[in-house]
Image (cartoon, rainbow, N blue to C red):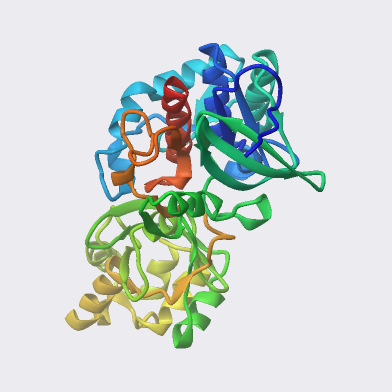
Length: 404
């Protein structure tokens, strides 16, 4: 098969996708004197970076370790994180004018609060290092040939081919379609005989249906600090009631550990004992109603909504032992059984992807297909909310660049 090379010089690797992993790979390869070509289907690089963190880009997390990642092999990401650390990420961006500021729970944002500044670092470096990024370039196929790989792409309505000895799949996951997300990376993995762990939406809002929905709906817009937990994990952050169910940081976090048909629990007063508070208040003002106690802990609207479950009109002196048990159960162990999730278009990331059994943890090269690399969200490594997935993407880009 005849391939139309981009230029007379040798291309070390073609990188599919100008997201976090692909851009970092191109830049790090450039530092090593390697020539890459980045092919991006969108009309701009870093589309998902630009919308992350509400346009502010939470670009790493100071607390990053393997513990914040879900994978079929929980140790797989350790090698990449040893090769490219959080300190490396911070130092890299500081070198090019991006100072970080910690917001909460180790989350690092640019002091400018502009995701565009992150993307500009890579665009400028790719220009300076002569690492071309071809936009509006839709890759149609990747095939093996005697010298490596032939990539067929469509650009401005014309089908063309380009060849290189190595190919990097940095196309991300299935969220979000309007940002150009597709299952291309997973299809390529399957084409070359690699196993794929079933993908599902992760870090995604959860839906409630049936008789419980009106109760959640009436609280739409109310946010409460909770401990959210199941048998596997717990998180302490805010939850947000919506007209279709639950969202907010803690819900997004637990969603990565939730599957259809399962339930989880809310402790809506995680650092206090509601029965002890009631007892203390009863000693001071026994005629005070339970509603007024709850209204001092939550919004009035939320306290009133608890009338569906609790005797909120009773005064404290008249609360029975059974009442107190019900109150304790509801406040500290509120059961939630979601009907589903909001899908890939509302998900932050994808859980699942190319099985880690198929890749070298040291190089991210496919064991069965030398020269084919997978990084970032396309791999079965999914981080928590809060910059962890960006740290994984940067690390993947660095590791792959060393080996192409």
